[in-house]
Length: 444
Image (cartoon, rainbow, N blue to C red; front, top):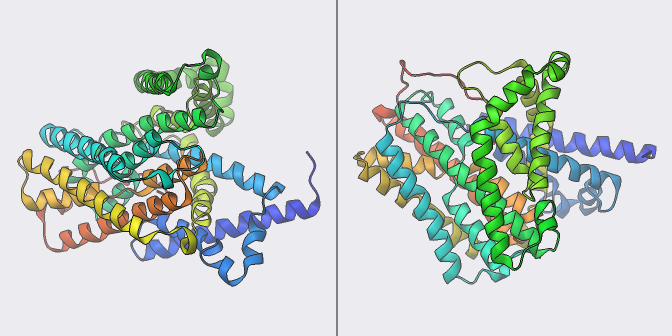
């Protein structure tokens, strides 16, 4: 399709503006020792209805006019950014190391995952959340979103915080990451079910569910749960051997030699398409593609490094800037709702993780620091907000509240752990015998 010169010029200007805003915001927040993702979102907020639109409404609306090639381009970049963001999260989704004590992992996973998720479901039943549903939302979907919002922990954010503090090789850090991996698995499995229900509500099911049909929501729920879990189990067990076999196959060896990054993109898109054929959201395939390509036993391949570098240079920052661009604090921030959501999420998550750590025999101080670390929601919480909002499951008020919840809990975790380290908590001292390798610096 040919485009007019002015359309191409507008596209380049808009992409450059969002990219510049995202990276400048990330650089500023990095200097402030805050997660860079918050700066990327802040850059988008400044361009949107919360800032620029108040001072110059025409300039803000010019950036993303509806129905234009520029708007379609931004939509494509947004979806690709989502896929690549989740893919990078999959690369980080590995146990924190064999040193993490099994008893602590077991108790904190059960209490810190089951109780918050169940607590979110219970709150949704007691509170009247119907007003927070989007056009394709339902009572069941809203309950699941609230449960995930309370239960989730961000692997990239908390790993970056601990890297900056120099404690990534400690038993404390490895335990945090091990439990966070398990929690993020639940996030994406349940998120696949939520998005499937949104398609049912919108009468826009696709893939296998559309072919076989179903009689009632219950059957759709059963299908999406079974398909998501089966896909996850199969790819978790066989994804890495499958990728190694494909990369070594003589049919694809030419592509591997020509461009290792291209081969990995093909594999990523193939798993996304497999999910779509099953009627599951493609981000689930992106997650498992990242898990399949990650190899903790060896250094990162050059092809994967190139793919990661370009994603973090362009797609992921623009994605988070676009998330911020959608935030309208003046009209969509309900302070009462956000206040009780923030309080409930922090109290339930902190209390349940703290109780699990104490049951595992940890000290009060260790349990407190661990619970605060597990309360950081970061990128996964923002992905939950953005994806469910784009699917019409939640409305703008719920979306803004979830994004702010993710931002503030991540900031709180960073400030608290730095304070605890300054106070001389021994388990937060760098472990010279432990691996101090730098984690891949994903934007979330």
